[in-house]
Amino acid sequence: MTDEPLPSLADLDRRLREARETVLGPPEPEAPSRTSNAFGSAMRLGVEFVSGFVVGGLIGWALDRWFGTRPWLMVVFFLLGAAAGTVNLIRAARRLQAEAEASEEQDSSTRG
Image 1 (cartoon, rainbow, N blue to C red):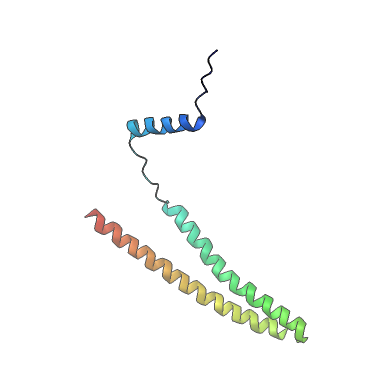
Image 2: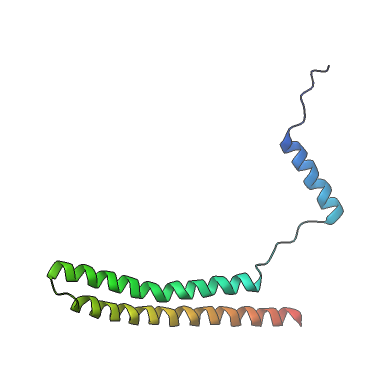
């Protein structure tokens, strides 16, 4: 037997990458699909909306327990949370729409 060390896996990985690049060319960056992007946006909008209700309700519940004013503060803060959730939802939707229009304009300008 010989005393030569076996090639490492890192060396093998490097050589495989070099071989792939010479045969296939450099790898192209993958753009996120529109479906996954839309799903992420929908989830974000849902969380923005529901979080206002939850936070407002929890704050109202805690204040009701502290002051002993059940259920008035919970109702008031739940409604304030609903308003805040709606405002956040509208703000996020406008931002997403502006980003979509900007990317659409950029795509149309690069095509011709």
